[in-house]
Image (tube, rainbow, N blue to C red; front, side, top):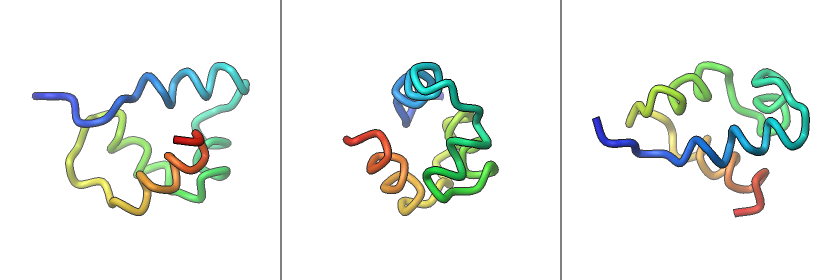
Length: 59
């Protein structure tokens, strides 16, 4: 399956800011399930979740 999301950006953000996945989800105001879908490169992720993550990552 082709990767849909650049998960490296999220992983780097977590490492640089010493955050857990749960902390990151709270910061972005997304569910842990949504982040799990991103890790799995699932195309069913809501666009709003991606916008919230992009905003947090200053993209």
